[in-house]
Image 1 (cartoon, rainbow, N blue to C red):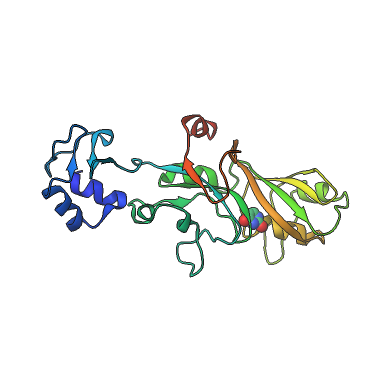
Image 2: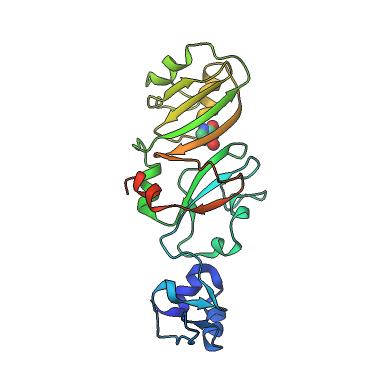
Length: 233
Ligand code: URA
């Protein structure tokens, strides 16, 4: 791939705009030498306006999603892309959530441009467990674990029962729920199916990666090597 296409794919502008940047000497190596269109040194040495480029492909990031944002690119309201650098929206291939959270839910969202990684996280019957901290309106009654782990719980409007899900009560109104699939509003609908109502939902882990304690709501960072290894990809 040539320099202009490579930089344009990172979201820095159209090919024509990047072409102009290259021709005017604003794309250099780390010694300040202007790069020609035919060159493509390693990502780390390229500078644009003297600054290193955004992270290379493939890129995977962890986002601490606040309530009030959707995981869609098309939603007219606030979306998780509003929490990321403007350029990330323009990358090609694009960054997509590997498993969405609904608008009012909070917690860990993994975004990646790596199709194989995404597939491993979200494919049906994925071995990649997602853990949710749930707060409910009415006291837990003690039968939830049996219902959720049975493999027979049917959600309203669906034709296939849910896979067995883990359940651990952590308070009168609080529990951890562990899923190996991701159906539409699954946790909320599971509690509705047993006569309760979810008032707060936080995803605290995906595939062995915990929501980082030092990642404030609304912030993101690139996944570490160790976290990626935890996913086994
Ligand atoms: N279950 C839900 O109900 N909502 C989510 O966002 C994720 C799982």
